Image (cartoon, rainbow, N blue to C red):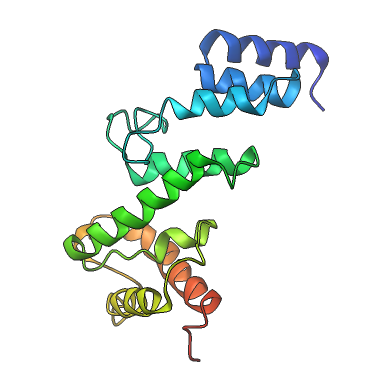
Length: 177
């Protein structure tokens, strides 16, 4: 258990070193802060195109919308029960648009991979799922793992991508085994 003194030190650390977003999250969970204040702080990281950037994920400090920053944004929206908010709708639309655009550029990258994190949309047509499945399945190598030239220097991710692919195929009834 954390002591009252340890908790107070942690609180002070967050208020001294945390961004406004972390401070508002803390206030929401521990000091009666509002969901609206958290969402307002989060909205500062959302770009015109609907995706998130601007350093929301601290290892990606570029201003552009990126998949990892958008993933963090979506997770925060889920944390605060904002699944039906306008900020969520804009982010989901960015994911769908960017996945469609990237499919042509990265033939071995597939929108199925992001779905294992729970941001699957029933609004996506089955034909889109089937085409995405064909593209993803084509990346399976002789050893059974997903791979792609774009990611050849990241072999430790292959098991994750492979299980993500299989789970998503199963969830969409596209796995015939």
